[in-house]
Image (tube, rainbow, N blue to C red; front, side, top):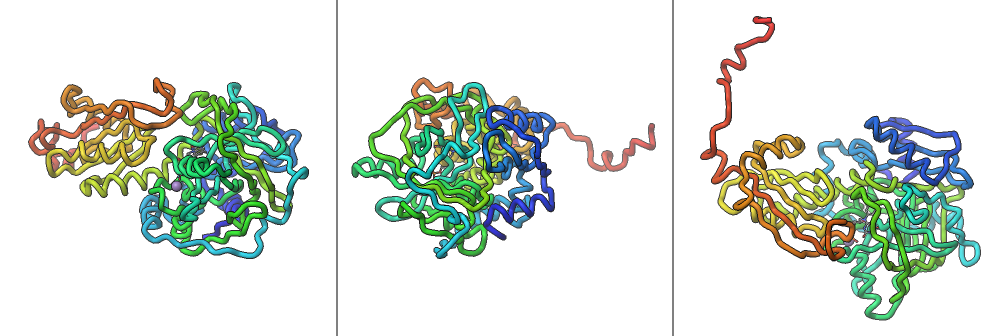
Length: 450
Ligand SMILES: Cc1cc2nc3c(=O)[nH]c(=O)nc-3n(C[C@H](O)[C@H](O)[C@H](O)COP(=O)(O)O)c2cc1C
Ligand SMILES: [Mn+2]
């Protein structure tokens, strides 16, 4: 497996996995690329798109790089059905990165007055967006005590030639690192990598413990060490094969207005006082390709977040209830859990583990092993016929949750709900299901009668 964005794009142009489109006609970064992506999604298409000419900008733009499971799997060189298994395997077999002396991402180095972020084709997606946002940047930061790296995607608001606004959810690791630095009254050094092979995305979105090093997980996925180069102005390493890197610091105690931004929940949210990033260097390839993830409820964001999340939830829930067979994130904040129930209380135990696996989980629904959790109709049937609200549902009020849930009274504080939709006491002793003798099903052939 390669770890280089360009080689990945070439491979996708050749194989056309999930579709590949080159748009030569000029298009505007304000709303037009978003409309293009949305129109394709309305026809159930999520091709990788290269916009060759963005109005007023010089860099081409790649969108939907992680838009389908098949594309991510092919980039990782593994069969689609093995994605979850391979990610889990990488958690337990991390491979640390290596430092290389030079990388194409530093072919051009801009510092001081030469930095101009407004040259980047950052997009405006929806009418409610406050301005252009960088969405496909992976933020690299280090814990001040252990030096362990953390990788995460964070929306970055373009605020000027060398300034960004950054949204860091309370309870997520980057925010924890920043808070530690703020307590020391020191700025937090970060680097933002744009134009990344999907393996970096899967690693950045891995939801592990604070101590778990996401770089090791990516190396584990790849099966060999990642190649990284030292930054020019901050004490961090970044992917040698990335397209663009922004280096900078987040100063302590500074907050400025950031947002609103069209979020994955389908709402324009999060206008508030957020931290800022002062950019100290911008490095890039000689002819960089800018990467974008369409804002809002697009397929790419959903797929990107879901792939590593499901692996982690399975790991977490199974560590508590080994009889859990599968999990599925069917919608924002929601988790379906498929359980082969052997003992009383297991469904609730699985729910507690799921709600605790990550602060984004708000609703957890457990069904029996005969229910296909990829089939919403079947899950709703289980809720309708195996569940009594007064007995089989429980609520834990006012828990830390997503800051992007518009139904919460207090930002980031939400009720968590568990639904035990398994048959009680168990499937064997439950109402018998409608069945026709198997022998008859086999014997009766439609063509014999019609
Ligand atoms: C496209 C995209 C944009 C995201 N934007 C943000 C954001 O603005 N703020 C945030 O806190 N998390 C954001 N996330 C989610 C985090 O990147 C994700 O929860 C990550 O696993 C956090 O890692 P950490 O806990 O190791 O810091 C985004 C995810 C994706 C896929
Ligand atoms: Mn982390």
